[in-house]
Image (cartoon, rainbow, N blue to C red; front, side, top):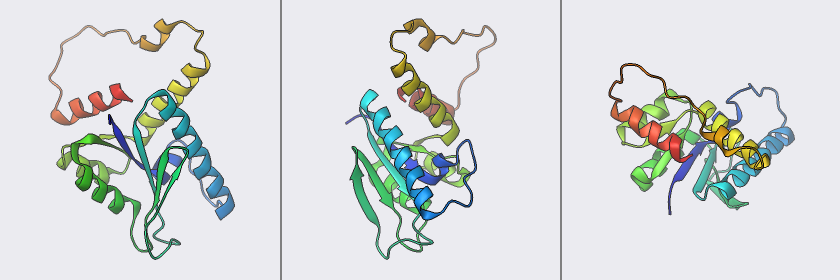
Length: 171
């Protein structure tokens, strides 16, 4: 199996807007919409995707896992944060995973474990533009690769930057 994304669910939901004061039903709808998006994205790029949501405040006594539309959805158990679940999965799965979160501490942890970390905002942009491109398939393929190479002094990328760049290319 190729890439495996470990996604900090609420972090990604909040990536470009702050969702406050949502009742449980609205929150469920937001989660479902995210799973739909991830599922559509996965149909373009075959990869394993695990999205972890915090259940620590109002969750169940045990961790809950379910498969929805090809996406593994995990709710952390009462008293355990999504970050802790993600860290555990990073330890279990090792370098094959890419962590999607804008949480600094979680990104630092991923780095320590030599695992690529991509911010939620970057991932969301990448996912949305892929889905958008898919809807406009008839448009010129040129546009998708269209970043102009900047001339100028090149510099060596740090290991961390290389890992992130390589992960971004695969997204």
